[in-house]
Image 1 (cartoon, rainbow, N blue to C red):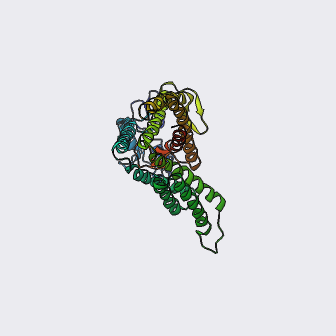
Image 2 (cartoon, rainbow, N blue to C red):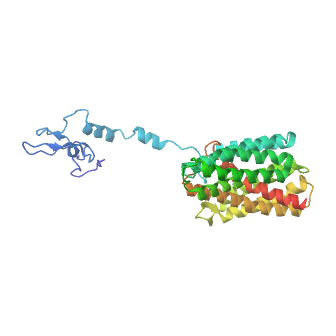
Image 3 (cartoon, rainbow, N blue to C red):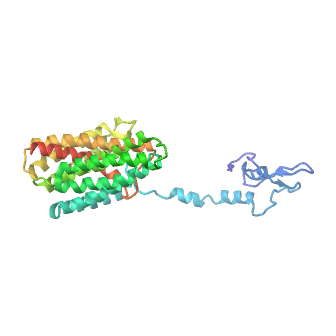
Length: 357
C-alpha cells in the first residue's frame, strides 16, 4: 500500500491523500492493474478519458482510500488478539496442567482403593495409543496390521494379571507371528507383498514399544504391595517430567540432542535427575519401607529410561513429519504423547524392584 508521506507523492498520491491519475494517451486504455496500483488485479482496460480513474465508484481505488483512512481493519483486530497462553514447549499450559492433575489424581485413587481397576485402565490406554501410532504409520504408507496389533496387545495386558511374565511372553510371541502372517497375505494369496520386511519390522517394534512395556505395570501390580510399587514408578515419572521442565525453562542453555529434540537441554536433564533421585529416595523409603539406596538407584534408572522414551517418540514423530500422535488430551497431544516416558519406566521399575525388594 502506498505511503501517505510528504513530497510530490508516490504511486498517484500526493501529501494530502488526493489521487492523481495519469493521463492516458488518446484512444488507448490503461490496464486496471496500473489504475488501481494493484499488480495482481485482472488486466481489464479503463477507458481513455477517465482522468480521475473512478470508473467504478465502488472499485479498488476507493477501497484503497477507505483502507488508508481506517487502518483498524478486521485483520488488524485479529492481529491484536492475544493468543492462548502456552509454555516454552509450545503447549497450552493451563490445559496441560488440568489434564495432568486430573489423570494423576484419578490414578492415585484407583491404586489406593481399587487397584484391580488399573488393569482395565492400562488396557484402554494401550488400545488408544496403539491405534494412534498405527494410524500415523499407515498415513505414511507403513502398513502395520492394526487388528492383530490391537487384539494381541490386549491379550498381553490381560494375561499379565493371572499369568505374570509367562502370559506376557506367550501373548507377545504369538501376536508377533500372527502379525507377520497377516502382513504377508493381507493383499491375497496371489499378490506379491510390498515392503514386507520394513512393515513387519515396524510392527514388531510397535508391539514391543507399547503393549509389551506397558504389561510390566500390570505384572508389577500382582507382586507384594504391587499398588504401591506402581504408584512409586508413576511418581518418579512425574518427578522426571516436572524437574526437567522447571530446570529447562529456568536454566536451559545447552541443547542435549538438538537433532532429535531441540528444546531438551542438559540443564533440564539435571533437573530431572535431582527431582527423580529425591522422589525415589522418599517413595521407596516411605511407601515401600525399603532401603533408601534402592530409591536412589531407581530414581537414576527412571531418569535415564524416561528421557530415552521421550527421545524415541520424538524421533518417530520427526520421521513421520508430525507434532503429536493424536489430539485426545488437550495440552499433551495424543495418548501416546503422554505414555512415551512411562512405558520404558514401567519395565525398568519392575526390573529394579523385583530384583532388589
